[in-house]
Image 1 (cartoon, rainbow, N blue to C red):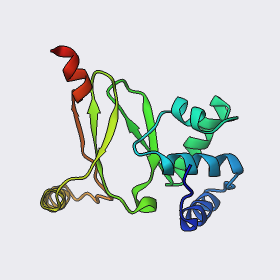
Image 2 (cartoon, rainbow, N blue to C red):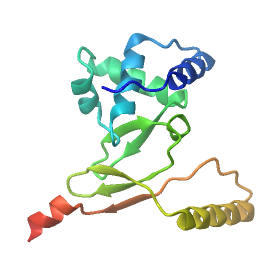
Image 3 (cartoon, rainbow, N blue to C red):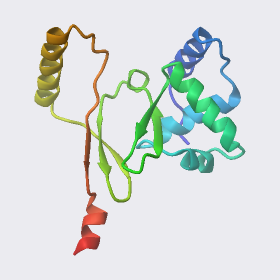
Amino acid sequence: MTALPIDIHSTTKDRLSRVGQRYTESRREIIDALGSSPHPITVNDLMESVKGLAQSSTYRNLAVLEEAGVVRRVVSADDMARYELAEDLTGHHHHHLICQRCSVVLDIDVPQTLERYVHEFSDEIAKQVNFRIDHHRLDLVGVCAQCSAQDR
């Protein structure tokens, strides 16, 4: 498991403190596991990665980390939550491909021209309805290559 930069841990500690929570060893292990995963992971994946985590406390810790703005939940086609670190912690803005059959969630980067268009579009919509947009996400839902191959 690769260690995350120390600033992620200090930022996590600060954010947890703001919501009246402590940065426990279990939460640190969860942050490390999420940071070393190349894609959003389920609670079961997380528990396999970090030995000794109880399922109920893992759900509670993820809820607290999400409330603190450290973790983001991604819901796949099977409505099962997957988790990843918040983008502002990783410095990596990305979107997702979600397979509606096997529910795999893959991170994707989009071209800067598309990102600019999404920002312009969202700014225009926000002005029209007097809405403040904090961020955006783009999830593309379809069928992954592995599931498509099974159709042949």
